[in-house]
Length: 584
Image 1 (cartoon, helix red, strand yellow):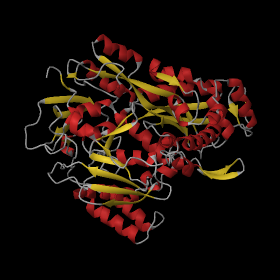
Image 2: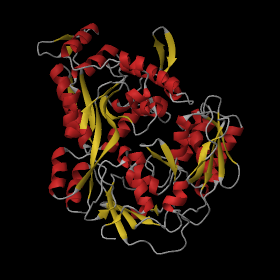
Image 3: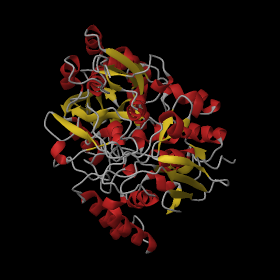
Image 4: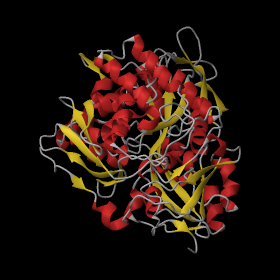
C-alpha cells in the first residue's frame, strides 16, 4: 500500500497564517488554568527525565505542548493530522521512510528550528528505550529543515506515524552533547545490555539544564514555580507568538478538591480535573459552562504479581466477577463514567473499530456474578472461614493493602468502592490514601500489593491503548530496576511460547486494517483471559469553562470535543487565538 508522498499543511498557511513573530509586545490577557505540578527540586527543566516539564509532575500532557511542541495535532473526528511544527509530513512512496519538513521558525533564544533538533531528540530517546525505536532504524537530517525517519523491516505503519507526529522535539542547543554520546555508543555497537548504555541513561536522567528553551509561545524558569501557582510566560520567538491572546498562563497548583473553590471564585477559568457530580452542579449553579469531553481512559485495579495470590489467574478472574463495574463507575464520576463492558484492554467505544468480529464474539464480559467468582476462588484452593473471608489451605486470609491517590477524586472513589465490594465478597483489603505522586512512584517501583491507575489511553491506535498499564507500569516499559506490576510478558499460552510485549508492539504496524484488527483481537483475548489488571470503568469529564473570563469555546457537540487531552480542543484554539480573554 502506498501513501501520499507528503501531506501539505494548508491549515498553517490558510486557516491560521502563522509566521515567525518579530519583536512585539506580549498580549495582555492571563489564562487561568490548573495543574498539580511539583515544586523544585523535584521539578526541574530536563525534558527527558521524571520531574521535568513533560512529566505528569511537571506541567503535564496538555500544557507541555504549549512550551515544547510536537510535529502535529491529531483530529479525532477526521483521523487526520494538522501541522504544528511540521510544514509537511508523510510516508515516502515505498513506505520505507517518514519524511517531515519543519516550519521555518525559531526557539525562544532566537536560534532556528532545524532537523537536527529532531535527530538529537531521537538519539536521546534511543538510549531511553523509546517505543519509537521498535519501528525505526535511523533518524537522519536531509537538510536544515527536513528529517527522515527510516523504518526497520516491519516498522512502517500508523503506530510509527503517531509516535513521530506526537513526539515533542527538544532543542539541540541544550542536548547536543548528550546526543553525541548516544550516537557514539550506537556507532560502537553498544546495546541496552551494556553498562555504558545504562550509564548514559543515568547521565541523561540526572542532567539539569538551567534554561528551558521553547518552540511554543510560552516558557518558564524554576523561579516561576510558586507554592500556589506557577507562570508560563509568553515569549516572542515562536511560530505561534503572534496568534495567541494571552501574555501568561497561570497554573494554580492542586487537584480536584483543592481547585474547586478556585473554579467557583474565578481564579481558574478552565480545568481538566474530573470533578464529582455535586461539584459539577455547583459550577452550573454559579453560571459556569461545562464542556463534556472524553478522557480516553478509565480507572484500573492494578495488582503486583509477586504478591500472593494475585499471581493466580483464577483469583484475578474472580475479582473481576466480584466487582459490579456499573456501581463502581458511579462512585468514580457519577454519570460521567461507565462500567467497562468488553474487558478487552481497549476502550469500549473503539472495540468494534479496533478488533476483529471473531475475537469480539469470544470476549468474556465478566458480568457481575459473585457465585461464579466463588467457584473460581474454590478452584484456586480457597475456602471461606467462619467470618466469610476467603482463606488458603494454610488458613491465611487475603489480607493486603490497596494504595490510592488521595487527591484524585475519581481514582479514590473507584478504589474505595472496589475495596468495599471485594471485602464484602470475602477479601480483607485495607485502603490507604497517599499523595498521588507517591502512588505513581510506588507502582513503578513495585512497592504495592493493589493500587489504581489509568488503563487504555488517549490514542486512536490499539497498540497504544494496550500500552497502559500492562507496558506502562510493567517492567518492560520502566527504567532499569523498576518492576512495576511485574506481570511476566513471556510465557506459554495455549501450548505456544509468546512474548506479549512484542505482540502489543506489533498490533498496529503496517497499513492493513484487517490484519491489525486480527492482531489486536489476539492480544485482547489474552488480556481478557489472564486479567493481569481489571479495567473498572471509562471516564468522561465535564470541563469548567468560565465564559465571564474566557471566550471562544465552540458550541456543544463540536467535532473538536471528540479528542482526549493529548489532542485537546483547547490546544488548537489557544494557538490559533480563538480562545481569548472575554470581551476582547
